[in-house]
Length: 243
Image (cartoon, rainbow, N blue to C red; front, top):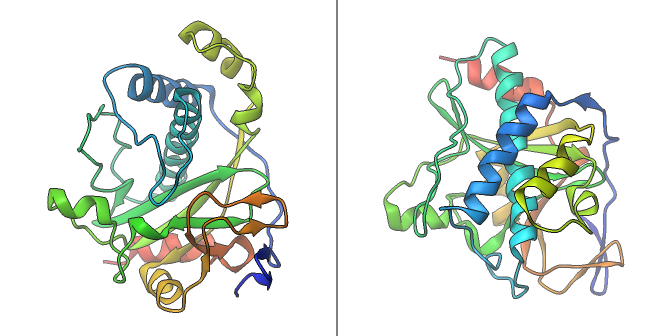
């Protein structure tokens, strides 16, 4: 289902309520250590989003990286609980020009994990990052052109941007604030590569500079699926268990 559009405003019409699941504190520490090293250590992340103009600060990149890695970890744990053969998340630190082949790999299939704050109701893919076959463009130059089989949205609570809003960027200060916070997640659903190709072909797109819900300006154009239109996780589990 497409978003409701009024001029340059786009409105969400199909939502899923956030369902709190506690995050293990050990997972929080793993995500923190990875994100800190990627941003303030030997790693590399793009300052701008693909097709975007806003320059992200180191703190903003850290926040995005922490949330994204935490999402991978909790999905990995969920797959393990389903007795699905899944490889551990990648915690290696990459420099400029080196990209992960995939977020998670389970039973020979590739999974793209997208994270969002708990109040979000959109699964988003930046249009400049994906070709018409649903392949991740940055991987093309490295010949790692694995096509994702499944795409999963994981939401994290609370919003890390709010938690760290007034915190200075020393490792101790960042960790102190994150450690004392109680973290939750939910997984509102998934989609297959077939669905992704459908939304690309049919231009399920929020344009750059459009307003989402009349208040949030889009920095870059994004393909989207509303959270209420995502498939139940059982589709992911059954798909990964197939031989």
